[in-house]
Length: 192
Image (cartoon, helix red, strand yellow):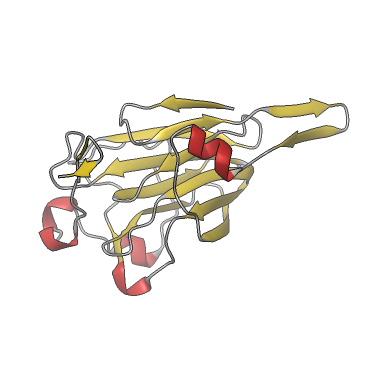
């Protein structure tokens, strides 16, 4: 397994080792101690699975309380996956990273708590699976407009299929500041 830093240090691209032959393949999608050794030391307590058709765009979502870190992957199809740093005070505030995750490269993306997340489907269908560090809390769910010009995300589709709920998401500049997570800096084992 290979864990790569991204342009946002806390977001990690993971390339699991796949063992394949003419019958198919096998890969380990999660093993707590191995991920801990690679710096991903979180207690995942909920797994989710969604299926979406081509050009579907889901996001950008996060929770204002009970923030969720996510370990995401695609078991069927292909998606363009995006993580946006929306933590107030972060040196990478409003920056985003994106990667193609699919059933051929088997890549995973670790998105820590405090980030907004979204993806769009590039294949006919995609099965998107992810582990979460906290339970889904609908009372604290917040969305941001996927096409926010201030974020300027380079989505690879022009006319996405977006839910009515996501269409109503506000721009970041119109979001109540109290709904944004706060960046906490860790120095020598302490949090500041």
